[in-house]
Image 1 (cartoon, rainbow, N blue to C red):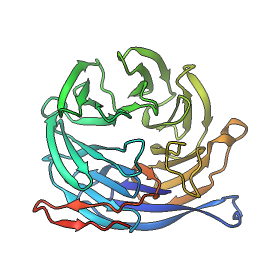
Image 2: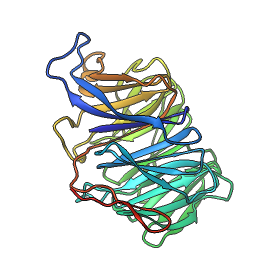
Image 3: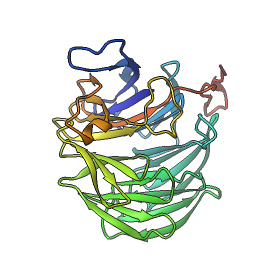
Length: 341
């Protein structure tokens, strides 16, 4: 698998997770081998996303950069926003290992939809009020709709088949993260220290989970689990069916956790992929990979670790298993990369 992280210093970091033949002195059994690192943006990077062999990043320079993870190279940039890019999301159909669409949201309330094979702009719409930034976007597993939350303290629903906003309601408080679970039956909304678990069908609140400090990132796991990280430096696994903490890795990081990646059985497997692996990134620049099964018994040690020595802001992960190479089309319509392996 691969991990990609963005930083406040405008650097993008790419790593490949590999097994070690023998564990080292600290008990680590995996290694994070650096694929690339360079200043890809002209402003701090705020969001990254990855699926199959392709990844994307967005930042304060109003652009989206696209990367070929298998070749460890940049494919180019997308220039369709006039404000900072605040959220990215790939949609990958269940039967495919390559994403079908890319959604990018910005600080002015706009949402752009791209075809990801090749990368062609399809439509831009207003997901939230003009001037009210989009904080997070999540695509339903069916690919038919997406949820957004923004600084206008509202929840929006986008009909992706028609490219129109279908639903819009006021929450009363700003939500920073929205996530569908792996089944699509529920979605999660994060507001400060609280995580709301909602039914996807009617948005009914099922549980309200409360963390000790502000939650900054979350990732959906299998069996109704939600993994979260935040200002307390912990990684918490929430049982959304029972409405309580399933287990927790205390002091997973010395500083706030800014990104979490969960490997599930829905992820295309490679020799290093494991449904119990969770990767986390901290604002102090450290990326760690955990076997969360150990957290149920004792305080686990990370299986792998890398220190970027930068202020990380986001983390994404993906399997590299795919028969396709990313295709990218420039504004002039010329193919920048169109090989298929």
